[in-house]
Amino acid sequence: MLVVMKAQATPEEIQAVCEHIEQLGFRAHPLPGAQRTAIGITGNKGEVDRGNLEALSGVAEVIRVSKAYKLASRDVKEEDTVIRFAGTDATIGGRDLAIIAGPCSIESREQAFAIAEQVAAGGAQFFRGGAYKPRTSPYAFQGLGLEALRIMAEIRERYGLRIVTEAIDSQTLELVAEWADVIQIGARNMQNFSLLKHAGRMRKPVMIKRGLSATLDEFLMAAEYVMSEGNYEVILCERGVRTFTDHTRNTLDLSIVPAVQRLSHLPILVDPSHGTGKRDSVLPMARAAVAAGADGILVEVHHQPEKALSDGPQSIYPDQFACMMGELEQIAPVVGRRLPRGIHVQAAAK
Ligand code: PEP
Ligand code: MN
Image (tube, rainbow, N blue to C red; front, side):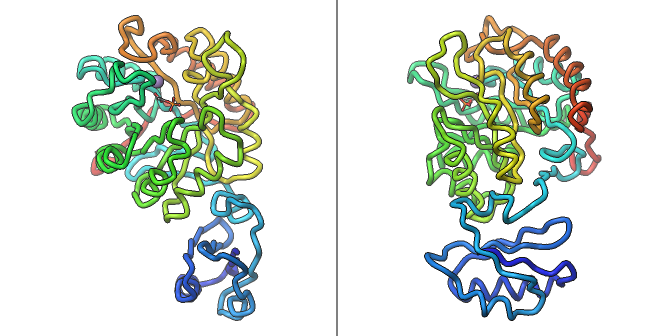
């Protein structure tokens, strides 16, 4: 169920409706929009008595939401969600494209700084790097852990770049939420429901990568898990799915971009690195992603990919990153978007 408040409803009226919903034993999710606030109701097994709610002051109407995902749906919030980063001009969602770039894994302080310097110069707003790596083999490099989180915090300090890194379980989630700006939930964890719920209790944006064989509905339900716990800052990321093709590591499913945007107000990014697994395919697919309407790109960049401890073959060189930015800058206006260059940080938020 969804309570649509009148455009002129006061914060007190919104609060009173939320309290009423909670008193009935449900959970209220106020979602402010440009025109009006909508309040999602979750936790109800059947119909909520709408007569009662409609009578409350400031309420315009009460609507039944039939989709399985509610808070992630455009039925509940019509306009696109824009995620902001306090003290900076960086956004994810909305007109400006968001660019997240960096190595697959943080391997050393020198490596991370060398790459960060280049992606900052190229105009990224976000730096990525794995501290905790979900590897197919237990013998492969598992990440530097807390040391990597500390290195990335230094990078934020030095270049202003906001930090995106993956949490692989509940334990690492707490650390990532403390040190990073965006919590990444990896493809292999997209249906780790307890981890999603835990991320929903954090107060940092959560980026969910699409599972290796996840349908659109399953992808949106993963977002719903996070939102159902009260964290509405969710970003989706298409990173390729398993198919029979063997010319790429995965098949980048760009057609999910308009499909997500039709059903959901959440931002959707595209990761052409994991999506193809091939360095030479990354730029063409990044261009295609922006042309398809993606809200931004997540890309792996390495200054010495032949020495990388993970995902070297799909990591682009810093000069290719610079080239990609130049191309995306030209494509963006064709689809009504803009590619901001770099991040501006107010002194107090550094
Ligand atoms: C990554 O971003 O390095 C990563 C492991 O991604 P995914 O979960 O999409 O495989
Ligand atoms: Mn990787």
